[in-house]
Structure formats: C-alpha cells, structure tokens
Length: 391
Image (cartoon, rainbow, N blue to C red; front, side, top):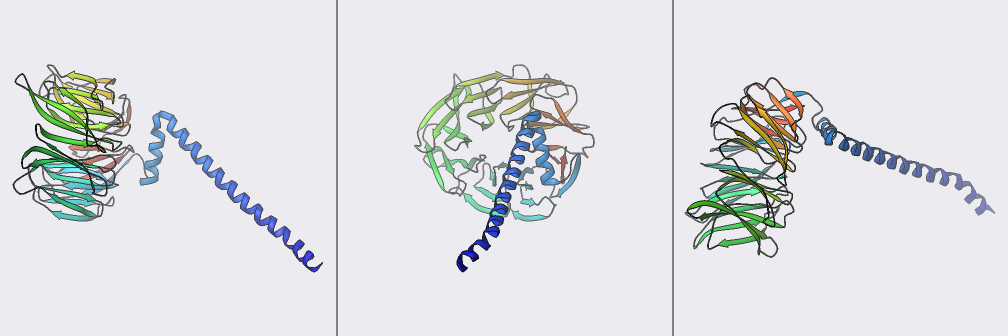
C-alpha cells in the first residue's frame, strides 16, 4: 500500500511535465507554421520582392539608405566582386578583401597584367589571362595558388554557383586543355584538345556538364563552337556552331547557355539546340548583364557613342521579357536575382526583370560601376571607395 500511495502521488507531476512538453512542441510547431506562411506569402507577393526586403532588413538592419563600405587601392584595372557580405578588389599589384564594416581582412601582393575575376558561392578566383598564375580565395584568404607549366599561360578560369572551377590553359603538344575542380579543389574532369583552340569554359549549374568554347573558321569567317562534355564520363554530348560570332562572354543559367558574341547574342540548350540567335545588325553593343536569375539584359544603341539606346531583357530560353528606350547616358548595368540595376549619369535605378522601376537613388557620389546583388542591394563603386545602397 505504501508503494501504491507513493506512485499515486507522482502522477500529477508526470502529467504536468508531459503537458508542458506538449505545449512547448505545439509552440514550436506554431512558430514554424507562421514562419512558413510568412515566407510563402512574401515570396508570392510582387515576385518575391517583399521577401528580398525582409532578407535585407535581417542582414543590414536598415532600408532606403546607403552604407559606407570600403576604401581600397585605386587602379583603373581593378576588378570587383562581392564575396559573402565582403568586397574583393583584385588589382595588378594586390588582391584585397574587406569586411562589411570596411576593415581589411587581407592584402595579397601579386603581379598580373590581364585580370579576370570570377565569384562563386563561397569562393572567388583571380586569373592572370595570358599569364601563368591564378588564385583561389575565400573570405579568410588564399585557399590555393595554381601555376601553368613554364612558358605556358592561362586562357580563363570561371567558378559556377557551387564553386566548381573550370580552367582553360595551354599545354605542350595540344592546342588547349580544360580542367574542372570541385569546391574542395579536387580534380573531377580533364580534357586535352588536339584539334580546337579552347578559349573559355564553365561548369553548368547542376555540376553535371562543362561547356567549352572553341575558336573555329567557316568560309574564311571566324566562328565559335559550343562543346558540352559530361563531367562523369568525360564524353562530348553535344556541340553547336555559332556562325559569324566570336564569344566574348558567356554563362550557364539553369540548363541554358547565354553567349554574348561580337556580332550577335545566342541562347542555347545544353543539348546544342539554338533557342535565340539575334544579330545586332546595324546596332552597337553598349553594355550587357548576363547574371540575373533566369534572365539577362542587352543595351544596344544606334550609334557607337551617344545616349540613344534600347534596353531589352530576355529569359534564359531567349524569349523577350521587356524593352525600354533610353535617352540618358548609361554608365553601367548589372543583374542579379530578380533585379537589374542601371547606373545613369545622375541616378541609380533598380528595375525588375520586366523593366518596372523598383527603387531609385538620386545621389550616386561619382560612382562609375555597380554590382547588383540577389537580395536587391547594389554595390556602388568609384575610383577608390565603394558603398552599398539599400533600397
């Protein structure tokens, strides 16, 4: 009976503990449900612009303002990239990285002539095109340095959004070679080209393919060919010739390849199908932005110099999204996420992909370059300093 009485006395406490545990679980479930509903609602509203505003508020704590950012070594050959929330500045003599507060994290002395900067998810690569050195970096410093064989040179080095690195370089006995490294720096693909000069390469967004650009000649006219290789089997799975066009810049967006050529703009599938082949005709290419989330933009003008231009956006499949006539001088354009930033002579304007105005900044403080970020912020860059605009 004593044992029974003792056991009976503990039951209310056990029930109370179980009730508290159940209540805590219900609270957690309620909080999770509310967060999911808020995120879903913000994503659905205005194509996710409210969600982007929430992300900016959580990260920076302010809105509709500018933040001082960095002061760095001024050089007209500088290349800029945002790595995390910090700024990477690559110059001929130094590579500098600054925290969001403006404090310098590292300053690496280098000696490079023709800089190429490519930023992935958590890493960046700085390549001396025509030189023999490249650097893979992250916010903490140099992860590794790579060099070609003596007397040879790099043609390009590009990171994709998963930090897979595609490197194109010279190799004795071949016209070119392409190597791919995963985010840990381990080699996962290698191809030696006997027949074609390979000028550039990039890994697809899903990290299953590598797209290379070879230089061709057809009927006495220069051309480019897209070569798509499977990373696992190292086999050529598709190819497509771009007639009368030399690829100057390109990117993989989803399962599409967007190619900016000297005389035309081409969108193609990884299977080699041409989705868009638009010649510039009698228009001049003034600027472009290829890195929107599933969209890109071209700025074409009637004259080689002047303010009368047409700004057009396309989706990754080559379909035209919107077009706008401009009569103001455009200094730079940049795309990321769902936004396109245009730096005019007297203002910065952020547009959505369908060229609807989203935000405007009147005082640009002599900025000459911009970098749109996926969260809707814009990095404003002048000769020796940079700052962020928070719409």
